[in-house]
Each structure stands twice: as structure tokens, then as C-alpha cells.
Amino acid sequence: MTYAYIHVSTDESVGIIALNRPKVLNALNLQLIDELVAELERMDRDPEIRAIVITGNDRAFAAGADIGEMAEASAIEIMQKDQFAVWDRIMLISKPIIAAVSGFALGGGCELMMSCDLVVASESALIGQPEVNLAVMPGAGGTQRLTRAVGLRKAMEMLLTGEPITAAEALRYGLVNKVVPVEAYFREALKLAKRIAKQPPLAVRMIKKAVHKADDLPLDEGMDYERNCFYLLLASEDRYEGMKAFLEKRKATFTGK
Image 1 (cartoon, one colour):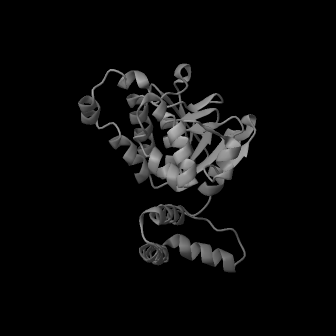
Image 2: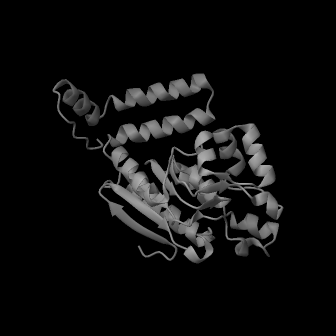
Image 3: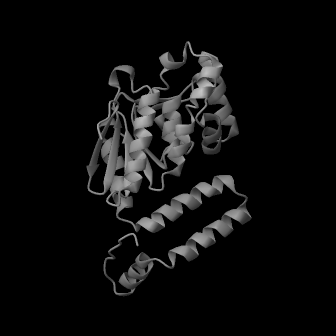
């Protein structure tokens, strides 16, 4: 497909989506989000792709929503557009998504980053939810995912002041997985994605689903869900191959079956 606001490529078994509105710091307008989600869903269906990287550029992952689209719109117009419904589809992607983040990851950019499963950030990353400065609040998960990630006190501080945190702070609070120099952040994210892409695909998908359930379910229900996923994986061809390869002291070949 041809897209206006994203660039798409692959590297081995990794799909790569680069946000591409550099003149406005990759501000997330409705068309960009529509294109991003459509491509995520296409990659999720592609059996050749086993992990996905979302990135921006060195200056900005995404500096927020496109305020120009909302500035003159009424509450009813925005509600009727149901612009956040498309964001919910990101959480239905079964393959692991790695965010490669540099520069600004603010507002919707922070929310998009938090919708990913893993985050590799450059030392220049600035991460935050500044919506309060515009007399609004996050609408794509900022209050919910940020609080789960960094805890109530830090989330409240970030949301009420609108002040971003540095990559080093984000690492300390568990909001990102790794911080590296600017020249290395995309390479490190791709390296991580390729490592995951070599793992058995069904197990990777089940692990992702079970981990996300940990946020939603009480512990006893989460444990039941985990065990059912475990039992289901026992029926896969990859399970037999993995265990046989282990016993035979050889490298396993996983097919996703």
C-alpha cells in the first residue's frame, strides 16, 4: 500500500513503520493514525513478520496530537468522529511491538509509545503528557497506562504539571526498557525485535496476551488465564520441536504451528 504519513519496510522477519510528518515533529493527525493502525493490522496478518518496530526520527518520535484538527471542533464533532476507537485496535495486535523513541514523545506520542510492548529510547528522549497546558487531558490512555507504568504519585505529577521527563528518568521509573545514544536507538530496537522474532511465534503471542491480562485481572483469574495458555501451547508443533531440540542438543526450528 501507498501511505502519505508513514514509511514501511522490513528487515528479515521484522516489520518497520516510521512515522513521517517531520515538518510538524510527527504530530499525530487522524490520517496518520489510520495509516499506522492499518499497517499494524496488515503486518499482524503477515506470517513472514514476527515482530514490529515503530519509530519516528532523531528529533521526534511524535510530539503529540495535531492540535490544528481539534482547535475549532466542537465536543460533539470530536465525539462523533470517535477518533480514539482506532487506538483501541492497537491493543489487539498479537505480535510484539517495539517502540524506537528519540526526541519528543509527548501527548499522543507518549500514549503511542506506551501502547507498544517494549521501548528503546535515545538519550535525547523527552517523554510526557502536556495536555493540561491546553486545558484538556489525555484521551488515548495517558492517565491509565502512565499510572500503571510509573505509579500514582509520579503519574499525577507529570499529568498535572505537564512537565516531561528525560530518558534516564523514564528508565528509572520503568517506562522504557533501555536508553542508548541517539545514534544507536533504532539499531538497538531492531536488534531486540530480531531477537524476539527468532522465538517460537505462538509462545510469543501467548506470553504477550498473558502479560497484558496481568493489568486487567485479579491474581487468581490471571493465574487461570496463564495456565490455560500454557496448556494450549502444549498442543503446538513448536512445543514438540523445542523440547526435542533441547534433548538432542541442537538448535530448534520454529514454524509457528
